[in-house]
Image (tube, rainbow, N blue to C red):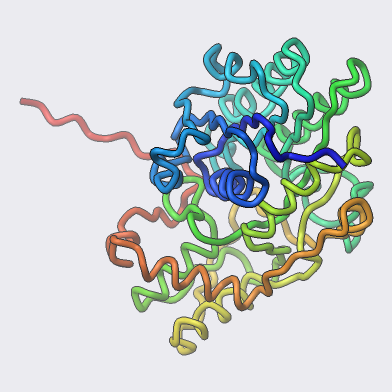
Length: 345
């Protein structure tokens, strides 16, 4: 088992939702020597790392992952966690840029990691590579039929990572997290997710918006468990060269999710509104995480209801009111942003 204690770590996308929690896990519980975060701040935020201001172990490099600045950040790194990406709904309105960031930049990073001798490269992929479940639970050998360019680009990144291991012996581990939720999760823009958006609507006294019949399912895991799982698998020598699922193994429908949120907020009367299906939406996801457990002994610690209650508390503690946050939510967030009208002098 390789230890992260005293390691020099790079986290791409480390100012984002999952990435910033991984930084916390590494610096607080794994006692790394330093964490260099590379983030364009397109989806990430300095606020997600503000509690590390003044700590010399954590530094942020604001850079596009495709840039030379990002590539140079890998020099001297013992471990790289590659999380930087553009999301699924972004891919629906800008597929070329989505592919460039998620696939091409991954290949560039792998080449750079090989050139500078990175000791371990953890490529964080996504359950989106599978598309809709053809059988459940979904193990690592489940067919990959992505529904979107996002899923396809993450699958391409996986393939590049596996080829770097096979051809060049770069110590790579590919990890496929399923649906992650928790504090700092995105609600605005094309990265906004169903759970935080539902919480904000319910806090405003509005019902959840559910696209489709509500019977589509996801496998949710709290971000504290996702971050712990990523740090755990990175230390597992037996996982090098492998592709590993990371999820809870529990399935919940989107309609049931909406009703759970309404109940926890104290508004069980807010019945979700069913709308037309969203393009590229996956019908069913349920992980088989036996490989992760067999390799590392990892099991999730946060029950779903407790995790949702944790997220509700977090949104209630925000400096912005729920109404102010609601103003930043676009219902059809998979469509291209509307151009800002120019006002003549």
